[in-house]
Length: 156
Image 1 (cartoon, rainbow, N blue to C red):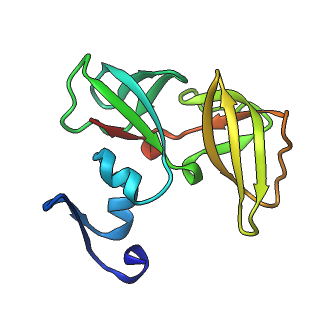
Image 2: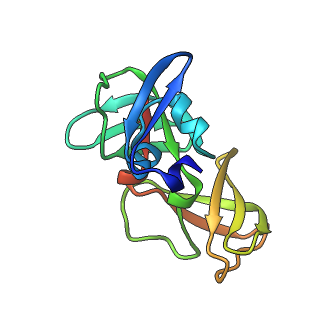
């Protein structure tokens, strides 16, 4: 409700102001694990930072992931990558994007009206996605997931 009603919000946890900003900024650009979890569902994959620069790279259980931002990160540091279900693009054909593309199997697809809440198995890891309700994917179907680098959050 705070995201819908506010121009700016602050997230206070354990008496500390953890993040402040516009609703979209706080939701899509947080680097704090607690804020990411508090503001909704996020797939979180623990990993290790293996490259920094214009784009950071993190080795995760899904594979190497590229992120657009890595503020405050250090090489070889433990970090997590968080990706919101609605940030993941799903398709039957392999996307032309070269980074953050993973093949998986649909475990579950639950129709909720405006979206289909899906669960995909990628190399033994569960990934939550939000399917478009006009494009139906069935359990057992092999699909590709693409997580654009600018939609992946580094949590350190």
